[in-house]
Image 1: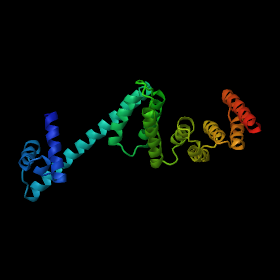
Image 2: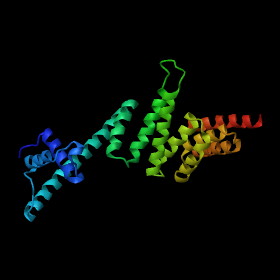
Image 3: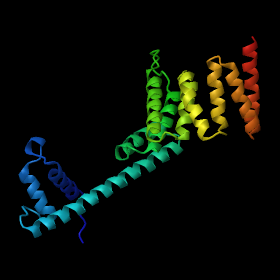
Image 4: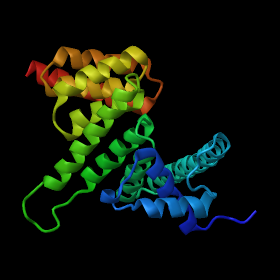
Amino acid sequence: MKKTSVLGKIAAAIGIFAVIFGFSSCNGVNAKTIKRVQMMEEGVSNPSTIEELSSAIKKYEKRSADLIAAQEQTGTWYKILATRYLDNGMYAEALDALEHAIHYYPTNQNLFYYVGVSAGQMANASLDFKATGSSSERTRYLLLAESAFLQALQLEPTYVRALYSLGVLYTCDMDQPLKAIPYLEKLLTIDTKHTDAMMVLARAHYQLYNYDAAVTYYDQVISTSGDKQKVANATYNKKVVLDAAYN
């Protein structure tokens, strides 16, 4: 069976969408052109009998399925490309690939999570190369990261990685610790032993001068974690908090 050329596939796509959406000449697609494409691609002109109509429907159903399969494959390739860029620390390129992938998969929470990760990394790497005194580039990436994590949570409210990342973003990057607390607290209702979330939550409370709450979460890390370095960090931070409280 002879393979359809690339131009042939494009022509077929125009023909299919013209039938589905009723394109007219005002949309830049002439009706005669559509009929000619139909005839060339599928041997369908003006079906009138039941047999001709049934045959035309079957042909266009197959063509539509082929187009959908091709689009799914393209979306998958963009997801793979974005993952490779992320693995290599190429976050600007990852953002571009993720934007294309989301075009095909707009309800995939993982894609939005990775947009947040990539945008956060780009924010941290943003420098004022032209010495304008502006931080607009960093702010733009931070807002993109925030919106991406929020969208991921809109799609999956119990998405632990997004909850944690949003908590870190608000506490460490955007200096909005009050916003971080509800997301981190929700995370700990899902994963009660998430000591990294406890550390960030303690820091958020410390920044808000809630010293007792900060000490409580550092104590939880000390009693829960099996990581000696993390326990040492929590112990040191607890001392800093207590010193601040007493002073």
